[in-house]
Image (cartoon, rainbow, N blue to C red; front, side, top):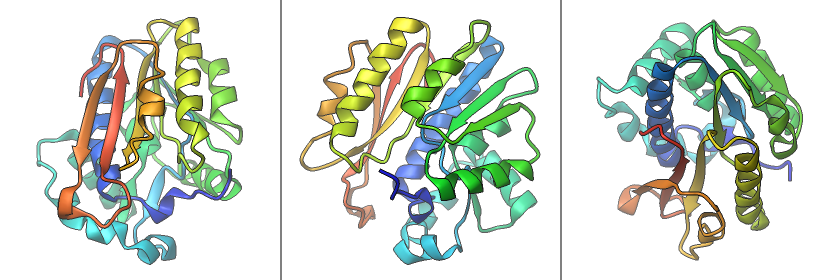
Length: 240
């Protein structure tokens, strides 16, 4: 399905949770040597929170205090400050730009994005970025493409962040993870999922055939989002 565009939801409560964890996860990983970072659903990589799409939902505005209250010592805070010095006060980094900010010239980044508009924006954003690692972008389905780019010489880190607009994506994501771990048992994976009242996310978690840790954040009365909270499953040694 090609209807999902993350610009409508950038910098909402779920984004802040996932990106705080992702930044710490990547920061810990960089201490181990050369990194190959991969994404199945990259989005635009960089978001203008004054874009009409972001203003339409109001989700970024709703989570503004949450964003501003990120601890000054947290690595995500520094990344956001650097992004805003370079692009402007209303910009917010997506996962791909967080990775580019933390990785170095010895590392590589592989990004998949199938949506035509998102793919075009992702390419343009990286064209004018101050990126350090090698970045390759593919207008292809991440579930079929990423397997081709696992490195034999670097630590592979995979971030999976589907839209879950189709219910089958939960089980599809779990099957994808199981297939990848048969190819590379040392693969480090972070996968995001929404916490919904129907608990459909268990279709993902119950089908992952590998030990993992969870990091879940409950929105409570902080949000008008349809989901109850934000979840991350982490497979591998790196912590958040």
